[in-house]
Length: 270
Image 1: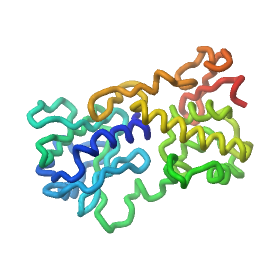
Image 2 (image 1 turned 90 degrees about the vertical axis):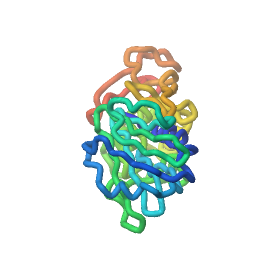
Image 3 (image 1 turned 120 degrees about the vertical axis):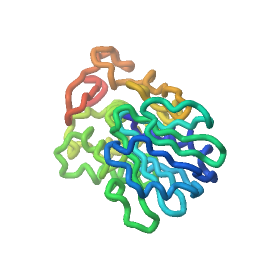
Image 4 (image 1 turned 30 degrees about the vertical axis):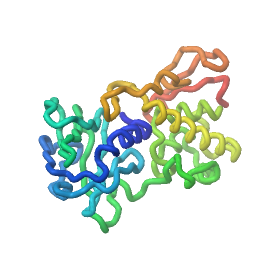
C-alpha cells in the first residue's frame, strides 16, 4: 500500500501540472471504487485548481467549490499524461486540464477512493479525527511521550495509530523503531521520555529520507511519472528477516504484531 512518502512523492509530482489550470473535463469510467464515486465530484469541471495538498495518506485537489479527496488504496497511482495517450485498463478516472494534459487515476484493485468535501462543510469523516502530521512542528517527542502514558499497547501499534500521528505505516514504523533502538513490541507506557524523543526524531528522519528517494517500492508503487521509489534499497529492518543487521550482524527477527509483519534487531533494539 502506498504510504505517506509515496503519497507525498505523488503530490509533488502532479502539483506543477495542476495548479492554476482549469479542469475542462472529468470522466469517471468506473465509479465502483472502495466507496462509490459521488456525483458531487462533478464540481471539479470548469473549475481552476487552487491547491494540491496532502492530509495523512489522502490527496486533496482543491477548487473554489471544495476539494476532491483521493486515496490510492492498495495499488493505486495518479499519473499525468499527454493528451492523446491511450487510456490503460484500470484507468478509472480521467481529469483533462486546460493545459491539454490528463490526470489519470489508475487502481487495479479498486481499493482507492475519490470523494468530495464541499467548501465550508465540516471536515469529511475520513479526515475529522486525524492526528498531527509527522513532519510538522505539531508532532515531537513530548506529544508522543504524552500519548504513551498508561498505554499497554505495543509502541509500534501506537505510532501506527492515525489518531496519535498520521502516515506512519508498517514499513516506516519498523524502520523508525530500528533507528531509535526501541523494540516494536515494547509496551508504550514503558517508553521513556528520552526514547520518545528518539522515536519522534527517527520518524521524521525516515519519512523525510524516503520522500527524497521517491518512496518505497514493495509490490507495484510508482510515482506520478511511472517511476519506482528507491527507499527499499536502504531498508535496515523491514523485510530483512534472517539477514544480518547492518549495524551489528545479528540476524533480523520477525513476528506478527497487530496482524502486521514486524522486523527488528534483537541486539540493537531494547
